[in-house]
Image (cartoon, rainbow, N blue to C red; front, side):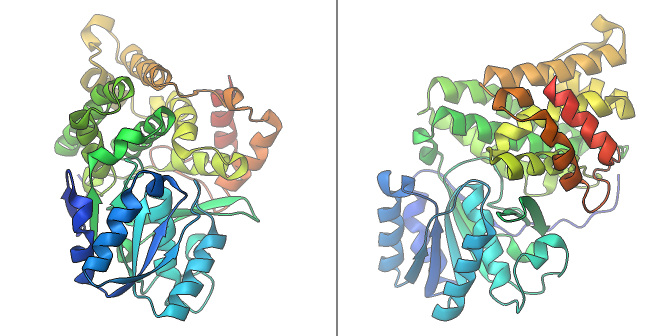
Length: 389
């Protein structure tokens, strides 16, 4: 196990009706805020009225910025930075899923910085300050409600990049599983894939002697898998949604990666895919991860066999071969994504094979990616080709 320094200060307020308390929690930090959200879904559901009523009751003034889309755009972030500066805003409340929260985090980074906020995502600058951010989560998926990361896209260059700093961990996040009752089935599936991918990025590590976090990762994965089909069959199953929402939060708050060397190559490969084709992140991950697994599993066959046994219930003794067991685990993972109606091949989403070199170049534009197995341009091309077959 590696040395680590774990600090996850986000306060999680979980359960029915908790959104009605948001004004009181915000008031502890600011009296004037930016309310940031996506399209019309929070108004159709009545959540917008509940949030704004709570803010007004607590004496919190707010400016609004809507329009966040999946794969949030740096253009809207820049608009948010301008509003915050002109209105003297020092706190941002994001109401939505990971895209809204990531957009809010990017705005928070940009306000006190004299340069362009995109500098933090290209590595040109390192964050030193940020506004405080909080979230009301409506889609369990990205885990951004308690993570130190944000991912946004530049429309002009078709680059999708991330920035990590503890400065943008939300000070609190409200999680009410009832918000999930109106999610379209495809959004539920995208979210499930996203959170499993966050765990995979941490679980597949070459660091030995990580028994505790191995078990935590495996338990979280089994919880997500066991409850995914339940919510797709009954989208008003509060208890199943509660399990998924809690697991999605745990998947990305940092705990599951402690003492391990995390990978993140698959996310980089998917980011290039969704930057070029503007697909849902969870959709892309369902295609990329099985291909990545097939390409790298020989790097640590015992770990992949452990994954097959402890997550999927495959018995190594029955197969009498660790490699066969490892391959069975990969097969079961792909079957699971198919069972929740996700594509597992690039051709299913009309990706052009001739775009693979372009995407691979974007993935490796800052050098090789990943730690489980270092992947250069040729490796990434190979994984995209595996995802195409």
